[in-house]
Length: 170
Image 1 (cartoon, one colour):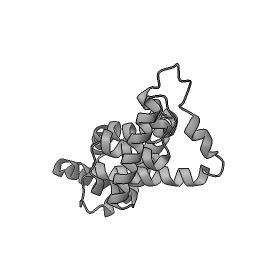
Image 2 (image 1 turned 135 degrees about the vertical axis):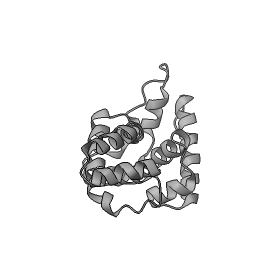
Image 3 (image 1 turned 180 degrees about the horizontal axis):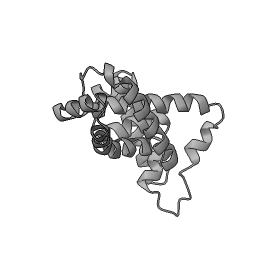
Image 4 (image 1 turned 90 degrees about the vertical axis):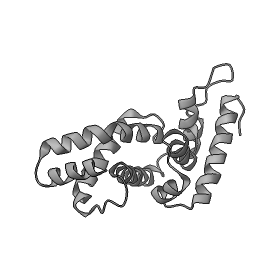
């Protein structure tokens, strides 16, 4: 973390190379998380990564270093995603999201497709916990939910994934 802190200080002092170094270190993981949270829509994940960095660079002078820079960036990314979801929620039929990844029972359902078909809350917790390794307490903080809610959503997400991968509906 101290190396990130030094790079951040250098960037705030005007060192563009320091920003490129931070960007190069943090962006692959940030993109990977967002890619899964937006159900594999690469353009949307890339847009959210850019929006995250725009906000982060503006807020960096006030970052207190209570957490790792990567954790802080993920929290900004989740906020960007939530804002985007709020603005588009009325335009998107919820049922369309649920059935987007389900093909026929004869075809093998890919894990990424099954994850993409999860409701937003389930997918968020599943990706952050089972794929990225965040604890329930960290997820609770990132998503502004209770740790118990994170645990129950993870359980439901796993159940939904098992059902999807076995070719059954929930």
